[in-house]
Length: 512
Image (cartoon, rainbow, N blue to C red):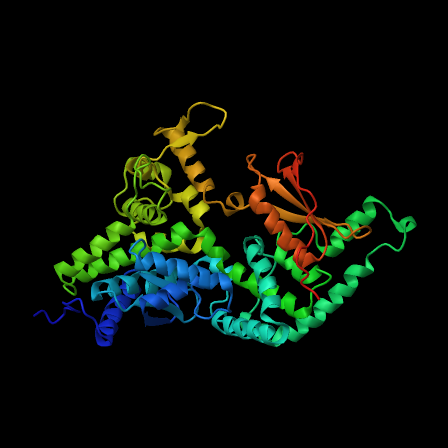
């Protein structure tokens, strides 16, 4: 038997995991130059994996009925064989926590450790968005504080009262982020200590807010007062949870703190929304290279390598547009394809590659080029910068103009010089979070009248909100604000009003 062989059977034990982890770590550090947080590998059951699904993957989470609903749904589908489970879940924390399932064979445990503990881990630690917006060393302590705080609120104020605040906050999670950095992210480890300081600040903000109400009609000064009021309230404001936390006049301190908890969690996951293709592509590229190297070194058997390739191929499979299984572009396929293509351009470029990528074509440093891309780009800019004509042809990408008033689709970009750039630009735009999520901003508060909160939806490409979903969300905003809310949809380019919703008032008094 080969003394260098790490394992030869499907069954695993912790000694085999440790030996394999060491071998993977050696390749990741010496050959790929990866820099990671300390790793913590945890073996869990399928039920625990389902539980992690339901609570958005964090190891500590406060209680909410929606998590149980997701758990029951996922468990039913899994038990009936209608849905599989992820190979792993990895937490952007320091130490970086990687969950692996005890039911997996040893070959899959090796793949998961390479994929999550080194691929995802390196991306979390080095990508600029994660460095700017997340506090990996503080998230676990913060989640422990959040869970404890919500539990204390349930004991003091009742389960139903807390649930109502969480329902409203969860409905606004995607509108509870700062899209553009204003200052460095808070140190999450300090949140518990600063709770009392924030409570005092909230009271001060409350008093200052209502001090701005005009005393009489004669004191109004038209547009000057409007500009002053907006300046004082920090309007317009795209982070709805932030504004409500700071300025909603009828919320108690504990309710503001819950909004802040939900907002911090939403902000923590915001970089992941913008880097799905890059993050999964990085992890897939890393595990593919590491497992190949282990096979070349004789550390894993041919049978093990075939199992790994089978799983890898399933992950990066991309159905064609006319395949009934097609549901969009697989982020694993696109990310892995682009990163393999970058390696090719670095090592064996064509004349076309040298024209399109003069900065790195033929530089003989594929891992250095990839590490630079992983650190400095998000999905939109990565695709715009690195998608090559070669990969566009290989994936058979093209651009279609879909006009709802036209009887047929029009192919507007094919495989020529202009077409490549159009395809790349269109594909990059499809990963722009600012275009994928509605741009809703608080623009004014009718302080002199009925204290109505006025919001604008800045419409892009003529896509209006779905009224069936918009009205319940407006109701949640009204419940938190305490007064009526009005939403106006305006064209983002011309500011012309396209649609206006009737005023929505609160349905559930959050403050007794």
